Length: 507
Image (cartoon, rainbow, N blue to C red; front, side, top):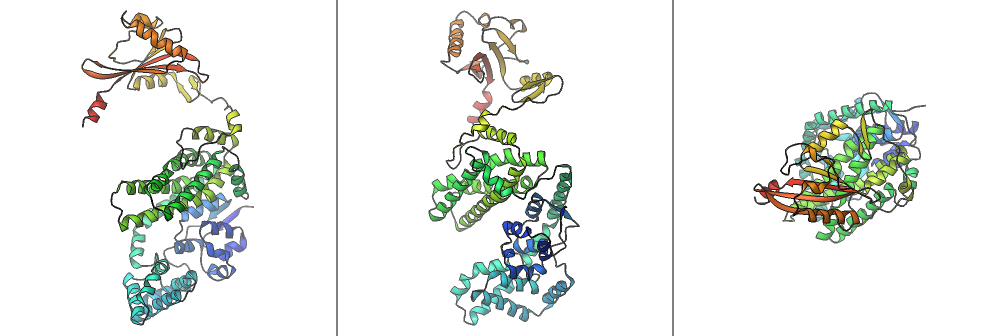
């Protein structure tokens, strides 16, 4: 039987119907949902979208997690800008119409309760019942009156972070900013719905044991999840060290997360989206990855480490820590449920192309090393190669488009191929199938023979020759061509006009 989520129902109603929602929502950041007293009080009044707005949790993250756990979404996405319940709406309207003095006294009462050590969430619950929006000046005036009444300024300053947390997202200024983003949010929601509709074409998966499956894969030495988890552990350690001792060396090491993010962006996100119709990670997490990487890069370029710089740094490092949690609890389990063993083998092989980050070396995954992929399915008339398949016209055009003069000489020193197009070093078609030495003047022949013999014996792999030709700087590179077993198959000669490089570095 399908598990359906109706966003117009309260959190309490939904968890009564689907108890497993409690853990899912807690993992997303609704930590108070695990407390029966909160679930039976606030949970009876709040819907998931309204709770998301209160907790500043992305609805796209919620939708992704619900679908990943086998739920279907039904009904229209309710508005989270104002209360859905008519009774609550009247309370909000009354609060907005209330006299300034009574509003100020209410605000002061909340601040006093925080000062007396009351739990932030319990105070917040009362606050949202009576205030839809609050002016920043009202908060300031309430704090000033508290100080006039004898509250030490040091106490108000100590509670500053709690005050910010209480009113976050509720000030009129923040409401206006939020309204400006409503159009963008509606487009994101529309896109999410479209992607969810597409998923109907994909087989449904059982996510009940997703965490266990991810943990099992992460225990296999060399498995991609093993490496990803080790990198996250290393990054977590670096973040802890950096909080204790902010050094340039540690900051540089933390910036290696760009390698970790690049692997996710190339190997995980696109495959989930294209092969399995799971676009949430690519639409949401990928964007956050880029923002974190870009912000760290921008901070690294700034010379002056001002108070603002440190504030930005704290914020971006917090986002990096949150991304570790999302990977471990959302991304990796989704991948563990969906990816086949053969796909993990391919990801393992492709991951070898990336640099080491956080000092975590790629270990050998024995099973993946033994695996040999099946034949590539190609259309009629295509040339199949280990890297893909192309038609002969495509391959010819590709070789002609590369900005090099390309010549290939086989292991018997016979000219076998020249790409087409104008050339500085002429290559007449009649030279094909001739011995390469016949194309060089006698004084050059000994050098050519020496290079080819060294290639054949494995003494050298390449020989670069810089020269001027017709007044232009040229680079001629001879390279040995070998197969996977290092058997010599021939030599390629590449001629490249380097005037562009000279002009670039002379600027």
